[in-house]
Every structure is written in C-alpha cells, then in structure tokens.
Length: 314
Image (tube, rainbow, N blue to C red; front, side, top):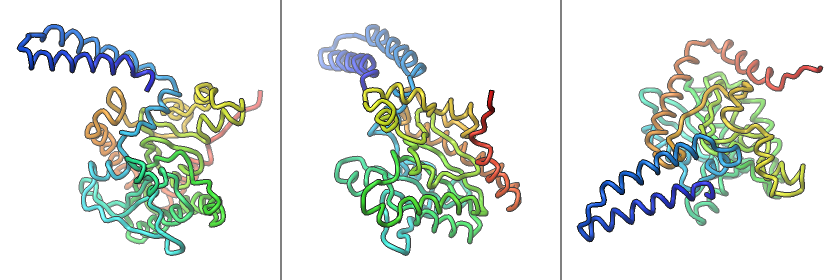
C-alpha cells in the first residue's frame, strides 16, 4: 500500500545488510540495529495515525486472515455443513459445528479466496441468497441444540448479480434480519475485515458486535458512496471519513460493543496474536451472555438495535 512504502524500503535495506553480513563476513550489527529502530518508529508513526481510507485498505489486504484461518487458529473439531436445502451450497459463506476452548458453538462467516481461482469459487466473499438462507438454517440448528452462534463478517457486500436478484437476494437478507432477532441462543458477530452494507448485516444481528481495529463496518463502501455523492471514485478518502466506518467511531456511536486489537501493520502481520485476541473477546462475551434467560436475551438484542440511529432536533 502507498502509505507503507517507507516501511517496505527500510525492511528491504535491513534484509540487504543482513545478506551482506552473512555472505561477506562483515559485522553490520550496529547498522542493522539502527535501521531496526527506525523501522519500529516508522511503523508506530504510520499505523497509529491511519486515516479511515487507509484502514479500509488494510481491511482489504490480500494476506489478511479470513474466516477459515480464524476457525483453524481458535477452534477445534470443525465440521462444515453445506447447502440451504432450497437451491445450492454457497461457498462465499461457510459454517458448521466447532469447539472454542471447551465451548461448543455454531461458527460461520464470509470466506474470500487467496488467488484468482479460489476467489472465483468463493465469489470474492460476496454471498448469494442461498448463502444467507444456509446461514439462517445453521442458526436455527444451533437453537435446536442450544449452542451459541459465532459469526465472522468479511464481505464488501452481498452479490448484486442478476441470478442473485432473481433468487431473492433482498428478501433473503430481510428475512435474516427479522429471524435473527428471534434466535434464542447467544450470537456474537465480529467484523474481521470488510463489513459492507446488507451483505454484512444479513448475518450481523447479534447480541455482541465486535470489529477488528483495522476493519470497517458501513452502510456502503467508500467507493459506492463517492460515486453517488460526487460521481467520482477519486473522492473515496473523503467518503470514508464522512461515513464514520472505523472501529473507534462505531464504538463511540454505540453501533458496536468491542474492538479486537491488531498488531502493528494489521492482522496479517501476526495472525496468531490477533487470533488469540479474538478468542479471548469471543469467550468473554459468550460468558456474559450465558447468564441471561431466553426472554432477557431476545429483549436485550431487540433493544440494542432499536436504539440505534437516535437523533434530536435543534
């Protein structure tokens, strides 16, 4: 990314000096240490003051961990379940039974691909109607067995193609919004990367909503907003600023409940560290929700979303 160029240049210089030191028997330890100090300072300076648009870019980093990565890192005994029992199995939204620590859960989330072939298979993490219907089927299965639901959100939005619209994309998302308010087990959702529009909200009606430090959660992407308001994608940085889509802004406005810390540079710099942070936060919220009765849980979830968007007239 453009703002990471000073970091990349310093890392390249450090590697060059290390190679020279090992191949030519030069002692360059002091020079390397100086550059390492400069590198750490540059990282802190850059990543502690990222703009909303830069955080959007970090959220989209191709090496960022995805849903299956976090399932592998924080859960055991994952058994993937397939199909919506109506049309097909949507590989852009996966889910199944798993165990986090000693807690049995139904885990699900959007899944992107690592290369072109897998991205086509996963539809770039943009779910079809059958994906949202599968997610709801799994949530109702979790309710049947009285186990909590853990959701990982990472999508630029629901797929807007003709086929998806013909099969009822809007209806599938709207139905999920209503039915998720009635699922009588704890639901903890976390935005691990992109949280775009109804594509994110279609599995996002949860008792606790968390967002990664460098993720975003928004009614529309910055590019979409810029194209509507300014008719130019060049205004995306201004749109990102205006949308208040960062974790800090969302927490301040009461849209989310927690922020998952990331290491300097983003989650892709140390997936195991950030997975540990995610696991602790999920278990913390599941523990706090376990003390609520069914009626208390549903009432609190309903009130949580009803109170959003309050305003006063001057």
